[in-house]
Figure 1 (tube, rainbow, N blue to C red):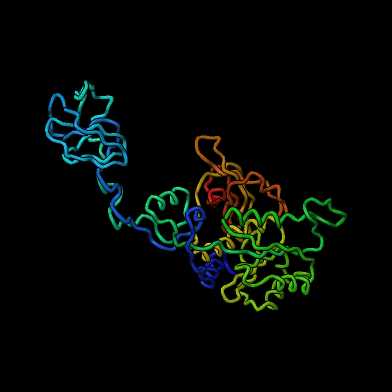
Figure 2: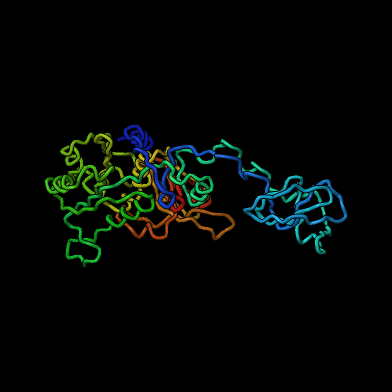
Length: 399
């Protein structure tokens, strides 16, 4: 059995980023940039007005100025400004040569062709050429995930087809003859399939594409045949729900070996989620996930999500925060590192974590309204209210 840190290291070692591709800006949000984007020219490309007003020379102390031009945004000034002269300018307009200050229209009185300053100081209200970025300045870096503002910046730079990582494609197989679709009323001995919905939602939150989702009984030959029925080129990662343990019908490892996968670990020192299996076949990855839904949730955020990040060219980030605990945690975590569902509370003077009433790895009710997973080191004593704990914020990870 290996530690969670060792498991993450193995995942990062065995996988390589997918080949990048160029995407239109309309499809680039959420994708990982695979090139550094630099400013193609100075931004702003010229001195421009930050206000509606009148452009004058800042050291021209004339009592009144002759309005000799009007410059709108998008136009080019036709003449320079001399002493005793000004140009009517609007926000975003290019500043004429000879001018270095804009007197706001609120601070000016207009009398025909003349402008008389009412109030004046040394504030220029001019955005200088290159003050945002100089030509060649790196503005976006390879490895960062593009958000809405990043896409807007790419448009500003004219980079309309950035080089990005494609979304990893996932084949998901749910095993268990006791499972029925969510819309079906379970008969005696049956339960509804929640893992299909859970995995589908987790993948969507991570910007990962669900290529295909299958349901099989607890039969090795049936599962292998179902997996072989899907073209290998259609997916990058295989997720098998159930079959990760050592019971008579837990055949996940055998199925992977029959399909030509090499298994790198089959247990991790984690609660819940100990019997997690990770394997690779060439560039493809596979995980066999313990069947209980809380185990699914924890192992996804603790380990599986890092595989998608590696495939996208991202160094996996573990966004832990340390906050006060509002209510007590169990007496002991035991020999395994425990990830405990919790919610973030803003009801007091400072944010705090409130542990969920999680009873077992099959208790989905413990995930309701959660915000975080508290990380409890192995063999930790009971943590009392007011003590500090580290947790991974989950909602902050949603793309």
